[in-house]
Length: 264
Image 1 (tube, rainbow, N blue to C red):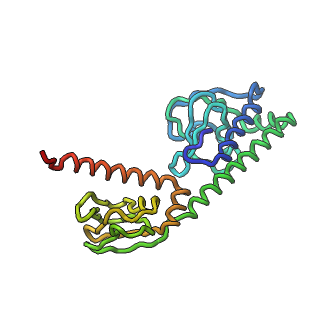
Image 2: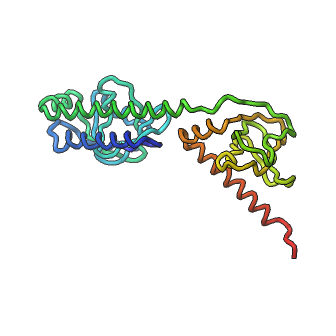
Image 3: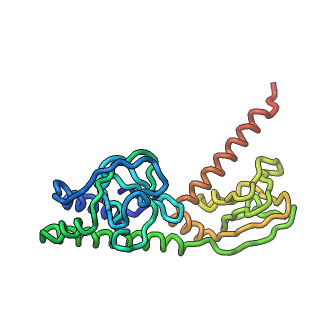
């Protein structure tokens, strides 16, 4: 299985263990089964019996939960195991043709219980699944506990949010409205709704290098320095947003320099 998104190393090791256990259980198995090709569709589970599980033999199957892609099954992975035991399960989407070996639940359990080694491996498989879910639950719990404070402020037009030369103790996100960025009184850019700004001085420990002034009535979120650093560690996607913002501002400065009058 491939997990879509950032996962801790311990979770990736558990996924590797699941793959190994599945191979040991099903390589050269003797169960009655039927191999079937399924075409691209929104939910594969609608295409076979509720008492059937499968072993993916060819192609990739995407696991969706509440409309979000969370993982991909690869050849050799078990699909539909949760459903045959009446447990909640996400949708399984096929974007291309896939080949699945279908096995009835009773045949599967008879095969597992007929050999003590297989019983041990299946128990190990289930415990590894439990361990994986516990690790991922803990991982996302830590992420959701690190939240930006609800320090929302309504900023009137013309108010200075950041002043050039001051020490940096907070990072800001402009929730609505817009702001102008200037250096020594010269306009050098703008901040638009949704952008994070003021982070560079927080990272470097230097004084503010520019002044940011509300261009219109706006709403602002203030994030203290320590809490922002914790937020970056827990949610790396915030760093990606910063990089995108900085890239846009660098491009804007480059365009200004290219169109500026150059003395002969």
